[in-house]
Length: 201
Image 1 (tube, rainbow, N blue to C red):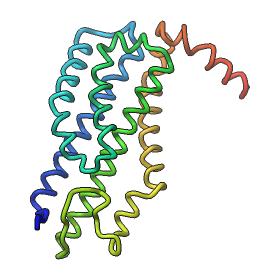
Image 2 (image 1 turned 180 degrees about the horizontal axis):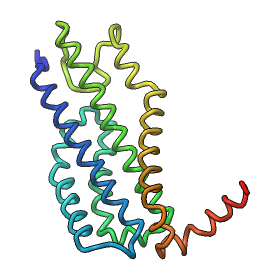
Image 3 (image 1 turned 60 degrees about the vertical axis):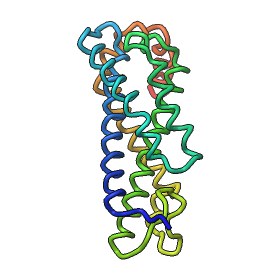
Image 4 (image 1 turned 90 degrees about the horizontal axis):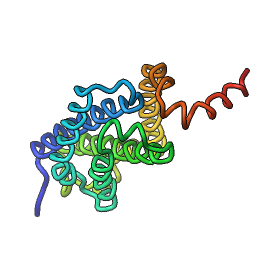
């Protein structure tokens, strides 16, 4: 019977952490698209480079997704990268399209965190003398699976969403002035923001 070894899980943990760093970097670079009027050739080149990295690592990313029900999220990563042709084009997208891209990015980020938590739990089981038969999240031992229950709980998922939204809010805060100056903001968002501000005045 096939049994997962500690070395295999440790390798997958490092793979996931590497993928998480790449995915976060992709989003940080993508945020520059909120200010299309001040984009530089260097920023565009950096964006194209990280797109290439994501595409190259996509097959590897799909391999670490053990649960079939999560495969569609992994596929959305490649679809998302393909749809955003450039930072300049990203700045021209409608709010609806940007919102859809953000949701897909968040889904993938949450999935990466869930996989990491599951692998770390499985590694702790092996180190304590237990056995793991597969890499699937749902195959972790249930009786001793408090950690699995923790990482899979709605509270932790909510926490991940809060963290991601905090990152997004931080990016918006840092780039708020150039965002306000951008044509995209003036055309699509300024009226909504002003309406919201008037409510609290």
